[in-house]
Length: 605
Image (cartoon, rainbow, N blue to C red; front, side, top):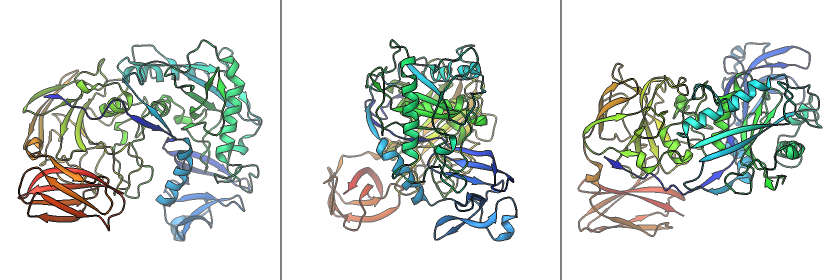
């Protein structure tokens, strides 16, 4: 076995708005006539959907102020004539689980994230050392004081007791980083004993909620003029200016020396909003205003709601902070197929309490807490030992296997439910992940030209079937005690081709697991010669040339593996016509006598 470099450590990452996806949050709404409506809110900061227990979507009629069941007309979500809670929607011919279209969702997302995007260069020192996180308490003009216990909030961020046993953001990242990152949080205004003090804004809560007949001071749901973005950013600017002089001058608030405050967590009194996107946990950037604390620009921030029930907790804090550190979401922002790529096996896909670990690949690529040497490639038959992902060091916590695709790999780590930060994962054992290095996170998945960066193999899972995401752990005393093309689940790349590897004999010790590995056919055997594609990027055509003589067959595929074109050549040169091919990234699979020689990536301009 040997190490393998999956990516360059020094790379450029884009920071932008990231989502906190929360599901089935209980909400109690008040209708204009005083009636109460019990329902649920599900979504993220781009789009929040109200619904009843059976999934029937609820919207507020802006003219009447009543919350009513939704219908879809010409592809648009609109209010119906049926007041929510006063009828059985199934008997009215209504359809459950109505959502805006993927195109509408992505438009909302683009409008919000594009202005906030900025490139940051990461190196070997990224996410190492001591980071001072600032927390600022905010309440609106019609709010009374916070009722939360300051000690409880402080422990959520800073509890260092019991050698990682306490569930705090400090302990989480100390553990996840193998003692390489230490995040300490200070609070402003400073509390009085156990009493939280706060900045009180000049506007009431309704000013930060959407306009309706019953909330005439709300913002118009557009990104032009006096809108959600302007109101949120001005609120946070006022709060930042209020506390600026309370922050000690000698506190290092820019540990990476980029001229910006490393992170501010704004903790706002109240619960999540009912059908809007401002009052929802999120990570964003203060890009429309310029405000400074001791010469450092306030930019990256987390937004939290202090009364959001089970969602104002360490797990959500850690999820949002990992966004600040550069990690993407691992769930689908909008997916009509309802495929779940990772589920609750990773902090960036679903939050457990206490927060669960992020997988080894995320620690490597985005956390910068595992080195190239600690990502070990399996090549030879043998018995191997793997240590828990949450070990004291990153040694032997993961292994890596090449596939026939140059961009896809299989990675495995060991999830130990006895660890305080993995008690929330579905099971104990080894978990297998498919890694696709062409993509950044899973949020943009569309099943066509945007695929998952990380996919967890699970029982009954396939390229077309979601399977049972909770049954992804392998160990010796359960049905999932082998992993090969003949088992359920089986290893496959994104286009559905199985990967010729074999794992079995999973055995468990108290603090380790062992497994046998064999590769049915060495992937290296397929790499028999250097093949080039020119020009690349290309416009009308691309010429594929092999360095050895003989007939070759070239297959043009999209990134999902769908065959678009086949060309045969009597010599070692093949010309692919790209005239009718849309711009984008594609693969060219080169074969000789039916044997796979090499796969090339090309870009059609």
